[in-house]
Amino acid sequence: MNGRALLQSFAALMAATLALVTSHPAPAQTFPSRPITIVVPFAAGGPIDTLARVMAERMRSPLGQPVIIENVTGAAGSIGAGRVARAAPDGYTVVAGFWGTHVVNGATQALAYDVLNDFEPILQMSNNMQVIVGRKTLPADNLKGLIAWLRANPDVAAAGTAGGGSPQHVDGIFFQNATGTRFRFVPYRGGAPAMQDLLAGQIDLIFADQTTSLPQVRSGNIKAFAVTGKSRLPTAPDIPSVDEAGLPGFYCSVWNALFAPKGTPRDVIARLNAAAVDALAEPEVRQRLADLGQQIVPRDEQTPEALAAFHKAEIAKWWPIIRAAGIRAE
Figure 1 (cartoon, rainbow, N blue to C red):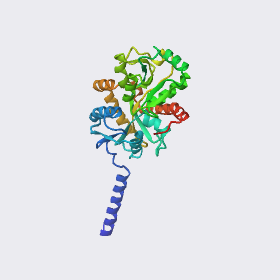
Figure 2 (figure 1 turned 180 degrees about the vertical axis):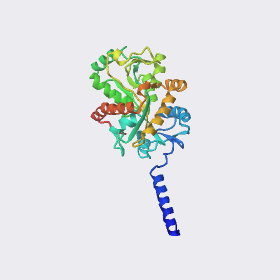
Figure 3 (figure 1 turned 180 degrees about the horizontal axis):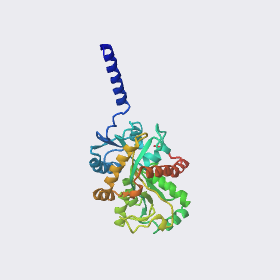
Figure 4 (figure 1 turned 90 degrees about the horizontal axis):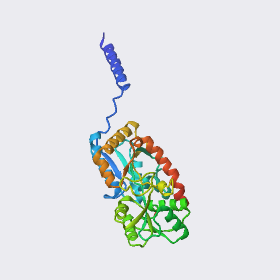
């Protein structure tokens, strides 16, 4: 074989080898190969931040990589959530969202992203049913009595809230619609200042979170009328559910969940979900969340599909109520 023929044969062999290699691409890099960031769209120290840090610490082991918390504050959580919506859909940036960021903000703000369609659901971590509480001197001892008193005294009672669009505010409007009652809303800079005025008798009721309300209920400083869920709380078994108290179906819950950017691969979502499920199964995590007033959702609801369906249903439920009330971001 002459030199030219030899070169042609070598070139043909190289071309065939290259075609073989390129027709079988190398497998994708195993996820995760570097740290993962959970964006918390609020300041450090708040409820969602505390919950995210508990989860991050426990997700580290099953993922085999550090899980870092980054607080990105502003605009009722929409700045942090928007950052994740625009992040690369590779699983390395997720958001710890909640009812406010992924339901309320979509109805009260002009967002540059879609709260439903620009995220991939990972898992619902927990929910926090509210407690309907009133001042100690209210002339009612149960929920039916409270509703009767409010109906007999329209526009007299004052309900404390943490501002427009807060759970206390939206739940209060839902309550008015469900019971045909009317009362005034008094905005505060948070749930704790509202509770202080309830203790002082300056306002009449709050649709309150468990953390601020249950210690005062146990001390006998305020009245508890019902829990806004289908069942009683393990931490407050003496308080009836709304179904038991005479207002069936009045369910309000401030839930928390993990979301990734839209387009994140299914196998990456599955890996993140599995790590979060493992974390929620640990006794230490369950106790810590219970201490925070959080109820972990049942195991069969800890799936991306369950969160997707629940998220869609929550938007369908709350957006008409919020928009009919004319609530806009402050």
